[in-house]
Image 1: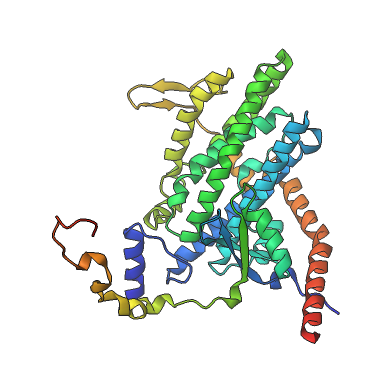
Image 2: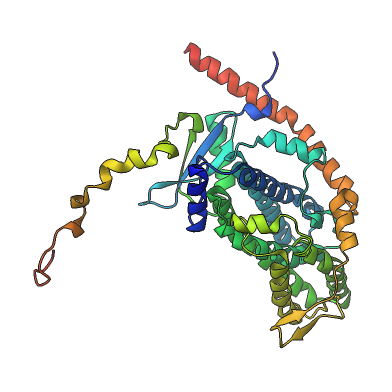
Length: 98
Length: 310
């Protein structure tokens, strides 16, 4: 049986929770032969200085992303809905707690 | 053309270009070349310092040096990951490095002859790297800028441990002080060369500045480094080996002597004192690690087969 070359190790995206109470945030990517090794590599690569309390690794191929080419039409549904923002509503200044 | 205008607008507005955005071919190629060269430098840069891990004078120094060399590996990986967002293949970049088709910083082709070199590399070489790299935290390509932010945070430890090591040696015996001065004498000029050719000779600078990949010219950064280093050398009690080095009140900068560009181009051209050795060692490490990579891939394939059956 022939071995696959190194470069076919899949690409993983790495997300780290910096501390309790914060979201996981994307920090970078790495290659690994499997999920378990991806986690260990992510620990060694992205948390050498207590940068995290939790790590997610996700095969890059599993991510569905919006396309940059269509970003204007894709996000346009929210573009004209100014009434979704609190500043849309004018309230007299002397009304408290609003 | 519309795409190019959008790209120019993003760069001009100090926004970041992200991987899936349209970008000019030249921008992509320049970035891959520059980031790969930087990644290779981190990886090759592990060698001169690793030379002293087994002979570090104390457990404390050994632990620090191990952590530092491990950081260099990490920096290389952040940067290779950034090149991959541009469509480069990491295996191919490594092949280009070990075949001598891509370069790395000329500084790592000099030998580390005494333990003070570990300190001087931290102080001067990492100090010069920080001068180069801090402005790159604002470079126009997002993944590169983000990698540089991580790297710069870690480089600060590198520089400080080096300076502290040298302060400790300077408080030691006369022989230790001589070792530090000898090391400074050998590393000062190569450190100045790390900023690359002078602005007149640097062919890529203008375009890179327009694309906001580079934020300052080589000579600007070199001058900044000299100005930073002079008071640090005084505090340490060492002499920088340049009789022409003096404060120029009119310019508000230090004047310094002429760089030996012949030596620079020799080293860049692969004729540095350790050039052959560095690349040969990298090639051997890569080849010797092949069985580990193969075993991990075989294990992963077997596990996924088991998973498919169950």
